[in-house]
Structures are given as C-alpha cells and as structure tokens.
Image 1 (tube, rainbow, N blue to C red):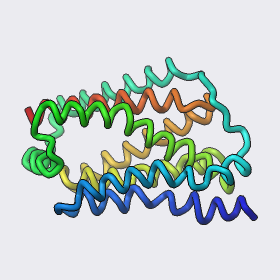
Image 2 (cartoon, one colour; image 1 turned 60 degrees about the vertical axis):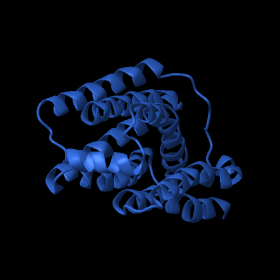
Image 3 (cartoon, helix red, strand yellow; image 1 turned 45 degrees about the vertical axis):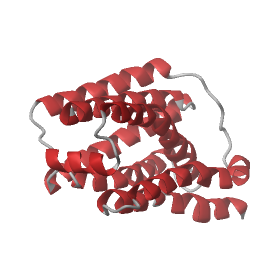
Length: 221
C-alpha cells in the first residue's frame, strides 16, 4: 500500500509542479515572478525529501554509482554543439522578449547575469537531475518499465520548457524545440538507467545549460 501511496500522491503530482510554476513565473509577468520562481525551485528540492523514507523502502537498486562521467561529458558536448550550430544557422528568437524577461529578473547587469548563469548551469542542473531523473523517473518505474517511465518523465520534463520557449519563438519552433528537450530528457534517463548514477546526465545537463547561458549572454551584452 505504501508503494501505491508514493506513486499516486508523491510521483504523479511531481510531474506537474515545475510546469505549473513556470506558467506563473514565466508567462505571468508581475512583481511576484521572482517569488514564484523561488517557491517552485524550493518545491523541487523539498518534495522528494518529503517522500524519502517511502521512496527508499519501495524503490530498490538506488545506489551512488560513479560511472558514466566521460559518457555524460561527450553527450553534453554533442548536445551543446548542436544547440550552438542551430543558433548560428539563424534560429531567431524574440530578442526584445528576452531582454524584457531578463530585466524582470534583474539580469541586465553582466555580473548578475554571470552569477545566475553559474547557478543555473551547476546548482539548478543538479536540482533538476535529482528531481526528474532520481525521483520522478525512478518513481515511475513502480508502475512502468524503464522505457515507458523515461517517456512519461521526459514528456513532463519538457512541459515547462514549452512555456519558456513560447515566450521567445513561434508556435512551430516552440513545438520542435520543446520536443527536442523531451528527447534530451529521455537520453538523460537512459544514461541514468545504464550507469545507475546521476553523474552522466548531470554533466551533460551542465554543458547544455552552459551553452544556452552563453548564447543568452551574447544576445544581451
């Protein structure tokens, strides 16, 4: 029964938190945006901890594996290279929209932007891997095979990115790029499944976020 409780009341709601939070803090531009952003990130950190005892009891095979670091770096470099190439080939976001959103988060100072970029690329990437791969992906395997769990978890992971992308790109590009995020999420699930370690998806995630923040810097400054 505790496994069912974990799945229905712990894992399934976890599929929605980041998407709902993003819809408020990213699309609803208000004085509360930064507070909602912080609350969303705090939820990502604390929700798995709330279910930690039941999670450890009902999901076997959780180890702190150390493998896959090189694979993670190589996959991350591949993803980052593709992102940079697509941008250089003429992917044109809404530059005014990016500047307005950066201003609403107080990121029009190069120093503040760089500090935020470091946080996003290192700490936030770790938070998302802990939440989406360690908690959600593994939790979904209470009911599904690893591949089905990866598809469901990665679709939910892509969900909040659709909201972010829709603020800067046309609907067709939003759908294409958001789907690409979901595919990337699936590959990170696969890396975690194969290595039983967050190192591989985390290092890959760091490199992807790093190149995105670098592109953002070139746009803003």
